[in-house]
Length: 354
Image (cartoon, rainbow, N blue to C red; front, side, top):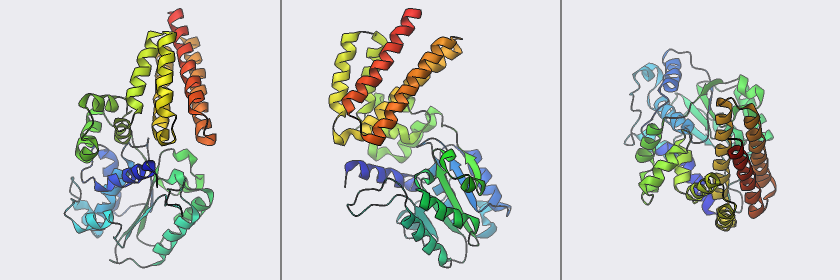
């Protein structure tokens, strides 16, 4: 069992521990209004960037649906169901008889699988074959639906096509376009926007304080600023080597000094080349991707179409290397040298034109 697996599992269950919902008020009201007026759809697709709050919203709504029977959902308290409520504790412990969380499971070697497999979907099918323990609503949450393999997706599609009475599905998706069109068509889509920085910071301090005890305040603010409105991404950044390494890299790129950049590439490669640093390497590449994207956007806003096109080319190269890393475990030193070399070349070209 790897540390990365443990951290991922901890992250998956973190939204279940969050009593307070920060942001996404409009999405919450849209969903609850449908239930309060008796017009609730059986399938809800909640999409948005990783860590933006999809699961926190889904857990918040699910607790209300299971704690408040029938039309009482119209009385749903704004703060939701607190940790002292039995439904809160049962759901978090995986012991609520009318709640099913479908997510990646561990294989025989105790490692988290790469995706949700058909065996997991069959377990859901068994759950739905039983009667509701309370005689009321049942809630199924799929976190995240993007991770279903083809067989699992087809099994879920059959359940969505003929849902059991009074059963409601919440499918969470980072990229809903990856889902089967037939799954998307059977769900109401609720897209979530990035959170403002102040709400990201509040979400971290309210829901992840224990995980951030040893994080310097300046580093935490930098993680929030680079999070893209995602509390989950800010949490990952604050707890990794990637952020400090990227800040040093960004300074070297801005200085446009070949020797300084070579030294940084060496330090970054040494820190991120180990097997245990794969998660940090992925985060570092995400930051490189975001930096190239920002440069492209700035060039476009300045009316420099040629420079924007050049940055688009660089961005495409960064993304291709990221895909190769995920697919074939490309050597980290070669990967980083290629990515940072491309960013440095484009940065120097931009300075020459300016």
